[in-house]
Image (cartoon, rainbow, N blue to C red):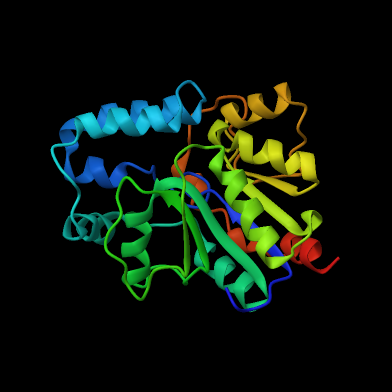
Length: 250
């Protein structure tokens, strides 16, 4: 992270920038536990169990570690982002805006994504170490291990302090209740909050905490509507560029 940055976008990944869950790679290789993995994901994103408890439950279900080859097989068959996401990441980085992926997905998932060139390289990754492979040249320069959802805020704060970026030039993006602690911290410091494909769990968290979501982008599921993946794929994330530019350049 030697380059100067004037703003930070710190974003969740699953169902926020991409139409997938953090454990889809496990379900792809072990379909016999797919329903249990989905249930666990919904429990912690709804703040009904901690991420640590979720990881513990998943480890008891798995017959062994997921190999790089198994991860690659999943990515070759299933990798997708919402429209315009890679372009938005590249657009930010080209304009001295740090794009940080800050997610409960696994480090190893992103290691293989970057190794295969499926996304522009990001300077910082914050993700869960449940799956993590030996380091590669393509890994982000800085990797933070995210063990609980509250770590999202701690990691964004650490990066902002390191770069000397003031609070009003921090943008946080999330979709579910698991992003609630991140948004709570952001609201306290005056960051700009973007609800992407906003779920009822995030809406409820913010309402109870009197947190204002500054911008709701994409489909709004805040009244518990059924997810509509096909319509979500029509949303162009490059439409966020003007909002990000306004925050970064003010």
